[in-house]
Structure formats: C-alpha cells, structure tokens
Image 1 (tube, rainbow, N blue to C red):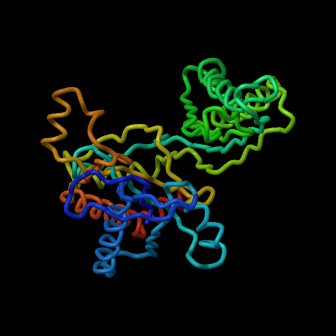
Image 2 (image 1 turned 120 degrees about the vertical axis):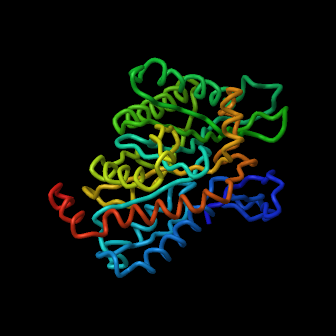
Amino acid sequence: MDALPVLEKTNLPYASKVHMKDTDGKSKPVMHACGHDMHVTCLMAASTLLHSAREDWKGTSLCVFQPNEERGGGAQAMIDDGLYDKGLAPVPDVVLGQHVINIKAGVVATRAGHVLAGKRVFEVRIHGRGGHGNAPQDCIDPVVLASYIVIRLQSIISREVDPNEMALITCGSIHAGEAPNIISDEAILKVDIRAYSPDVLDKAVEGFKRIVEAECQTSAVTEKADIKEIENVPPLINSPEIVKPLTKIFKSFFGSMTEEMKVDTASDDFSILAPKEVPYAYWNFGSTDHKVWEEARRQGKLNELPGNHSPLYAPLIEPTLKAGTDALALAALTFLTEEEAAVHRRYGT
C-alpha cells in the first residue's frame, strides 16, 4: 500500500525484494520508502487502543486507510466513490492525520496554518516534425523546443512570483527519441508545480501554460501541445482551533519530545478527506535514531540523513511505532468528548 518504485538499499533483514508492474507496464522494484507501512501499523494499533477504551469516550471514530497518497489520487478517489455522500461513512466533525519523517524518533511535531505545499503535475506532449539528424532544416526539433520551455519556466519563479512567496517548478522527466541521428517527432515532459498559496499556485500554472504555448508558436509547430493534468493536491493548511488543543495534549503526554513542525514544500492529499468547512490537523512524528541525528547535527549534515523517498530510509521501529500509535489515539480522544464537541459547535464546525 503506497510503496514507491525504488530499489531498497537499507540492507535490513526485512528489506523489500519485491518487483511490481507499474502503470506504465514496466516491472520495477518497490519499497516503503515513505513510511506508509508505519502509518498503516500505527493506525491499526491506535484503533485497537480506542476500541479497548470504548467505555471512556463518546462519538464515532472512523479510521481511514487511504491508498495512493504518493500519486495524489487516493483521497479524491475515496470521495468520488462516495465515502461521505453515499453513506459509507458519516461526515466528520474533525479530520486528523499524521506522517512519519526523519526527525528524532519518538518526537511529535505540530503547527497551525500552512504546513505543506499544494502541487499540480502536468504531462506535456510536444509535437514536432521528425527526420534525419543530417537535415535539421527540414524538421521541427521537439528536443530543442522542450529545452527552451524548461529554461523559460524558471523565469516564472524569478520574475513573476512575488519574492516573498514560495513557488517551485520542476521538470523531472523529458523523453524524446531513441537514436542519436534521428530527430524525434515528439517530446514528452512531466512538470511539477508547487506553492503554499492557492493563488500563487494558480498563477504559476497559468504562466506554465502560457510559456508552453508561446514557445511552441515560436518554433512554428503545426499542432498545439497536449497538456494533461495528472495530479492536483491543494495546499495543506492546518486549522488553528484543532491544532491548539492537540498541541496541548501532546505536550502533556510526550513532554520534551514535542516540537514545532517545520513548513515543508512536500505535498499530501490528506486535506481532501475534510469536507468544506470541516477543520483538520496533520502532524509529523519522528523516526531517526537519536545518536545518529545528534551526530549529523554536530557535523552540520542533517540534510544528508536518509529521509522519505530515499532508498536508504529505514525508520527506527521503536519508539517510532509507539509514538505514532499514541499520537493518533490521543488526538482522537481529544475530540471524542462532549466538552470538545461543544467547542466545535461554538466555532461553527
């Protein structure tokens, strides 16, 4: 569930050796490089804890094992399949979620407001005119055109987005042709656009589309580029009225093992599970051995610690699992009381 097409290099006795056929039809090695095996285990354990203490809380606890977060489609697919509007589950009063990262194992980190970027991902198919490499004058080279697009896209960040705002544009994949002396008749780009602000994200996407169209016209293509959106994940903005009581209960339970969550340019489609006007909170819990983390900090190499999506990412099993399980159970219990329900009614949530 939500493994990644990565060859695991942790050398752990339980390291993945599995290969699976991807959506492109190719067989690829897969590993839990983002910790979703941790997420599933923690949620199963937390649900067991809540069930064992069911006489001590009131309300309804719904445990959602969402697939396909990695490609930004799982939450929306569950909504589209009628998670709430077909009576499969009650509409929630609050939505809670967590993600393991490579901070110190056992640490729980919270933050109100913006925490993760929104992202929109596109596949662009550029149509050129193919031919022999010895006669470029008779062709429209899509590789040259694609190169201009990739370079020009960065001007959106440097010249169109307010320097006080955050936005990123990455072309992580370009493919065209199979031989050095053949000019291909098409090139395919995959472009990832991110921002914390929905307005900034929309502006960057508008600029991206404008540049693709303009560069194609400049190269005199005879067919417009095909632009297909393949992922759309909104920015994740935690509700302050939910984060405040969560942070309080986490600090009372975890003590010094709590900290402020850092704002990250990563994305997660978790917030889609919260219907409009329903508040939500999303936090991190740590997975790195304390000695390893402290040594990396001492050497100024925290950025080199294996983290999510690395083939070397190996979350310490404990106290990571215990912290993740306790955090989920505590978070649920924070809102499964009549007193907290009254607070939400007061906030209009």
